[in-house]
Length: 268
Length: 195
Image (cartoon, rainbow over all chains, first blue to last red):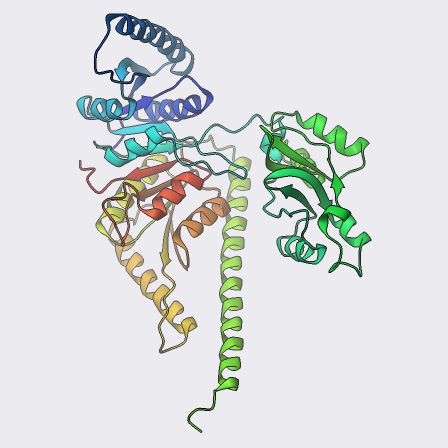
């Protein structure tokens, strides 16, 4: 491995995460007059007996992968030197061996982090590569979500409440974190939303009233892939301030009026 | 007399501790606000001057003074030089609990000593690069991501293991957290990456 990074190993998977990582590889290569080693591994479980039929299937997949790599390179690596490599087998080991064999100076790969409530661990392949890599590894997050979608602008609200909680405790948390709304979750499932207006409406009885009586039950929800316009329209027409964002039925964030304003301000 | 509980003493210590925590939190907030403002001003001037976006504009390099992080610093320095980028070095002191002497003075002294060590290192190696030294105290992973966010740094360069390196974990706890949570690419340098 040496500096500057001239031989850049870029393991890809044909999804959006990989494109973001490949873009970084391309930029590094451009700057250093380097070569991108575009690499795809067709994952295969090593079977104790290699039946001929299975090997044919994998050969077919490898050919498809080679073609996809060719297209990817034509689109993303214009004006840059590159080599296309494929392998069938266990991905992490293959990446490490290839890095050693082709004397890569750096490995650039996507690491599958996720924003929102659930911070998913590094992808297992990324983990294994980081463990054994013979050269520095540039870990690239997934690409920025499309800026016209809710996912890009929503806020993840750590303040949530349970239906049986008293308003006083919830209000304290909302105040501390400076949040104006709190989704109400029953065993992780969204059942309502509580805003500071609901809290204010119960002033004087905060120690007695429970969330389930003050909240708006079964609120309108949206998804991370909902367009921004749609979210704004709902907030406007229903005169509400916050929309819980659900992905696969799980709460991943809240889209508030302030977020719409921020999106508007940052759009230039 | 001997078995009377020192109630007032306890209360006074609590008040003192609360004040110290407040002071520490205030200091932390000020630092982050200052970094944020600095980076916004710089982005504004860059935009005005119509500077073409280079690969990396601001590089954050957390260091620990051990072999691994000095290796990372070397790479960070070369990247900064190559990209004419600003280099920010960050050392996060561990929260020290010492029974004698107040935590405030300990923290200040620890930070000052870290600052001196960083200046030694940078004096030797980083004379021709725009470089800023930052020292804070607390949770390293949290600080690194907070500073990256405040600075809007486009790259973090760090070693995979720190002081408390436990070899059987492939990634030290700090590096693991930063890779998982940072908003920008992270370049990790292993102990055994050699030229």
